[in-house]
Image (tube, rainbow, N blue to C red; front, side, top):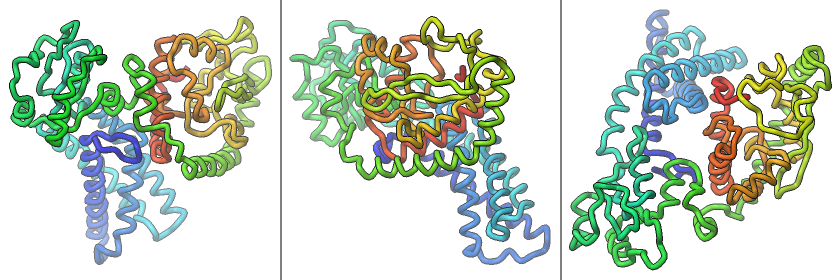
Length: 461
């Protein structure tokens, strides 16, 4: 994987996305050439078209990122990828058509965009088949050796078996594990020269997956492979990098303290984040005020009670604030106390099902963002009753409050809606990853991919 602004991106995803960007540039030029030939006009020098070509490619490419073209599901399923590609190209062409209308003559002709749309879908699908067949092969995966043969080693084995995995495990070495789980693991005693063994297998990374590290660290082995230029990684850090979440089953306070992340040098990033929140929330409130007013009226007509729902939530550093949303439940929904929403929750009104599905009920939260109680991106704010319960049952739950809560977040785009302690645990792993690795780049990535959650709201309740 490559680390970009503290966030890890798989090599396969990076290579595929750059190839797609190059293909989009070629498609844009082909569409221009086709339209020029059809109308009998001069094609003109390529230099004069670089800006519109680049604009076309970047806008469609951004739409592809937003709708999830590079998610693991799209890497596994051509049907999934094809559907997302069609939506992404369509959205990109619509955006370019609007831009062409607002700035006449500065972009492609709308007829050229039609050619570009058809060509883009065809070329990108063919390109994905050809490129995916190459980058998915073993030679394009990192070669990893695992020290350990217990449950942690088995988890790495399962992780490496996924089609989208960017690594392949070439060897497991049993290191006197109390419980041997990986049957194919070789005993360390069977290898005389570990350095020669690593070199022979072409290992690029060694992962330490011992169940018990106290008085069991193979320091001599680790030093030998490290001095050979082979990267040595610890289990929790490896899982964090490969999955985009902090693994609660293996982390401990010392890892959180000494691992990279939770940087205090975020003054510029925090200022930029706040400036964006103020500008974006102000613009969103102005643009959506008619929508909010309309649905507030519809909520009043649909069921008895106020149009807006206010609830106490826990924010930054554990401080509470009032969250405002369009009401989607009956007024007596929480007469017995707050509880998680269920599938086909009977407390949700008829209109509430719709506004939850398309996320219209979330729009008033922009007011909380403008006031500084929330951000656009961050962990989901929970009610104090849930927080108190989860802090008792889940380790490090309080650490998610070290960043402002958000309307959308890393957990929301990576994990469907959950209504159990186990679901809360999984979402906490993503929240901790965000709190640990926050950068404006990660915020941008989350904001883009929120579009996918809105278009395909599988987890909305």
